[in-house]
Image (cartoon, rainbow, N blue to C red; front, side, top):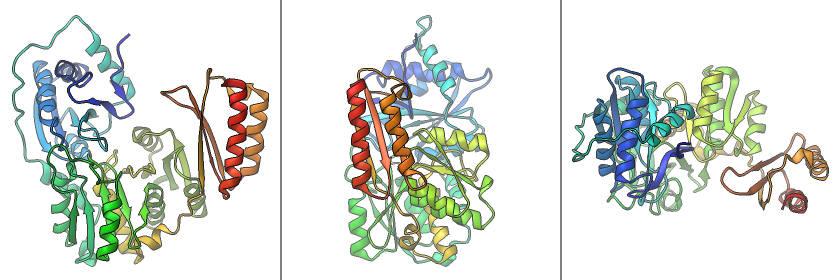
Length: 444
């Protein structure tokens, strides 16, 4: 059997160690080309600002060129930029070298098809099998620099379509945190060209400070800036620019659930919400489901991971989906999360509704959530244990219409995860602990 390389969001690891060592990265580059349909392959590579990005790009390109591909570098550019340019500029595949919100020591490789969609699991397994095949080798040699093309302008023009006629917002004071990552090459210029009065944070990458006390996973500095400066809008991107978290004028963090609600309602009002439905993962709060229901919008749930959100959107031909973490997909623009498109879409809702970000976010009532992990010795079917099944049914009955119970085994650890949402935290915590006690009794 081939060794697993791809996780839920591409190949990840510490740069310089397996699977991101020089030899394996070359083999991955070659295997990607071998897995593509026969013919002339053109591969686009983009990266974030990590110090390891440049040599990883060169090693990957060395392997791809050894198999006959033409390789072009877009340089430092957000992940969705690579997805868009791959689709629109006649590339066979696009590769992003980034570890998203992880620290600088880590890096990763994620791959997009010529249609701008993330590689399917089937294709990822195929690449893994080719990498593991000992019958072939990548020719040795120096990993040369990859020729670049000036492609960022095309991506910026595409993103600007998310906010047509920005004149009504001209002069609006906004604070933008680029996480010292990939959006530093795009966001400052984009917001200034649109007429905003921009204050930048996390806009001085040095190869090691990506996501360091900044960006969507560390919005504290953005919160202070918004409050101290009296800004009406703050946005923080992650290291590769495919997600965005917001801060309203009161200094409150606005997550992906609130963004999906405000955007879904506005798309519906404009007749642009296909299928009158939104896709979110099992981790989105029950409050989102109930609020969407008040507007007769269906919430379709899928497993955690923006690739699974994308798959549901494609399968059902829907317009909007995302994750609580800020990965939001607007299929009118792209089939992957785009933090910049999300930011402009939120500004568009503010403009069209004439409501502040805090006012829009207040439409979402976030229900208390309790998560309990129980270590187990076996992964039994819970419904086959009568005492556990009875407890699950009793809790479901109590929650009916105003709460949610999710029980699932971890994909990586011997754990059962029990998640409850409801109106009263003390009540749902008691129920979660009761279920956990029964699981320990029978399976622990």
